[in-house]
Structure formats: C-alpha cells, structure tokens
Length: 169
Image 1 (cartoon, rainbow, N blue to C red):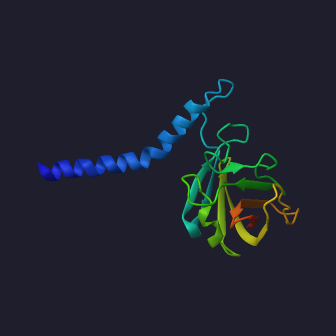
Image 2: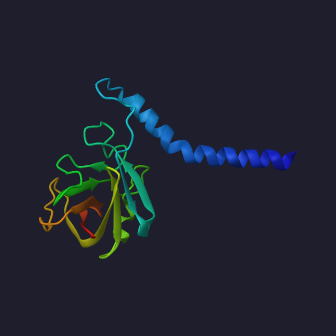
C-alpha cells in the first residue's frame, strides 16, 4: 500500500505544479474584477524560442491581462503580424516570478523565434541585438520592408535589451 500512496503523492505534486500557472491566471482575473471585459478569454498567440526553451502565451492587446505585471505583453504600439508589421513584445528580466524574459540575453544572431498567431506559425530569425539606455523610450532599428518581431526587456542596471527578428520565408 505504501508504494501506491507514494505514487499518488507524486502524481498530485506533478498535477499541482503543472496547473499552478493556470490557477494564477484565474486568480489574477478575479483580482482585476473588471466587469467591462470578458475574462473568459484565452491566449491569442504563443511565443516560442527553442534555444532557451521559452514558450508563453499572449493575450490580445485590449485585455487587462496584456500587462507585464502578469505576463509577457504586446506593447500598445505593436502590430499583430501582417505585411511589413512590427510585433513588439515586452517582458520583465530579473529573478522574480514574472521575469519571463530572463534568458533572452542568451540569444544570438541567427537564432529562431516562433510566433503562433491566427492559426499561422511565423518563423523569425534574430538579425540584430543591441542595448539602449532605460529612458522609457526605445528607438527600434529595423528594416521597414520586412515583417519584424521585436523583443524588449530590461538589462543590467539601467539598460534595455532589444532583439530584432525578421520573418524567414
């Protein structure tokens, strides 16, 4: 009987650890309590970066959950992927529970970034990586004739890390 109890305990721990993020999101929705928004929403996109084992969902820009206090987020000025668009995604770096972009610093030129959006898998390749002073404003250096993804996070003490990727066709 002891092995069965151990097996059940291990399953319970596995189940709880894999569902904590989902429960956290439900609690965030309850906390926000904004009746003007339909909180039965789901992720509209997924960001996947194989090199660093990163996979995370994104909410639509209008959602109160599209906020770096809870998740990675589309910047308000960002565009959803389309011809020559720039999809800008921001996230925290550091050592807190919401530091989802902590490992972006390990990306290099040529690495792949995938964005699943509107039933399509966009494949971007990192083309530029640079830092800027943290002033609340980031000048994005990009080729406006290409579909672009831009990832931005804080970096070191007073800088921001900017990663530019162009769609691979």
